[in-house]
Image (tube, rainbow, N blue to C red; front, side, top):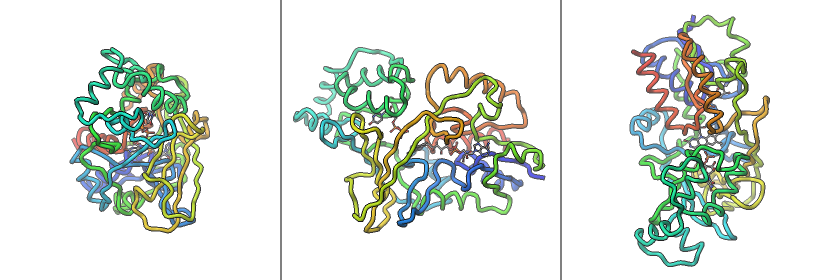
Length: 367
Ligand code: FAD
Ligand code: UDP
């Protein structure tokens, strides 16, 4: 008899399994339909020995000391600021948009944050409370920068006009008046020194935790005795899509390995206006791996079909309303705890997922 059956071995499932096994000394079985642990953060060494993230680039960043300290029990870190550039009008420019972006793009010579703010004030639209992703950008940097940096990237990534996407999507990217060229400004920015999969192996290394891979929980649910379920898969699938399907974006990757030490100046280059892919990642910049070969990965975004992997919930009002119908059903189930990016249908980052799993452990499980 297991105390908990956990569906999904990503951050949500693994953190809860660890907490229950370690702190409560209870028995857990964690089931994943994939052939590996780690969920979307899973990484592996490709045939050339380069460490690659299977489900797209995962750059760890957080302001939460609690999350950083918790994960630090299971990995050493490689401290590294995540740097992204974007290809606009034939140049590689800093994104988030900052003082250098403006100077390089327009051949200006702004030298103080005050001057940069004055420039943004002169071009931004007067929108007090942005209602969608287009308004969110226009209200900060105006039309030209919106058209060059955001509009087409967003169309490629979501196949939805920014006008029809929640403001929170493009609001993930700040605007800066200084020269800070880091993608994130969080206090802790780093990568697990030996990779995410190695960190997950450590999180789940506990005699109270059993792991069953290559298994859809629906196929074994009647054969494994357990008391409580923790579900981190897609919420609409749990309820057999009875209110309809929640849409997701999926990704297709094109990997290329070259006999060069590096081919890009930074770990990620975004292509808002050129090509069909959204971005190219060069892994070694972030992982710090030494090799005379390098692997780059081009990312193509598509609408998920029934058989695709689900990568991104799509933040729109109609989807949120459909999600809430499922959440109301979920709230009625006392013996199932729902948790994670797919179960909450939320565009969470890894640190938010870890923080939420720790909170659920404290408030719903331990209490
Ligand atoms: P998941 O990792 O999705 O895990 C859910 C698991 O449940 C999966 O392994 C799945 O196989 C399993 N499962 C589902 N249904 C079943 C079933 N029926 N039976 C058995 N198993 C099932 N966050 C950052 O902080 N920084 C980043 O740079 C970043 N980049 C990202 C890039 C991409 C392309 C994507 C898609 C996400 C990115 N994220 C990033 C977000 C990050 O991936 C998530 O926040 C985190 O991995 C979510 O963890 P989770 O455990 O909730 O879900
Ligand atoms: N975005 C954009 N241009 C960029 C980077 C981001 O338009 O160069 C928008 C786009 O809508 C994207 C969102 O901002 O989906 C969030 O970007 P982020 O880099 O956080 O996306 P993720 O890494 O989660 O795919």
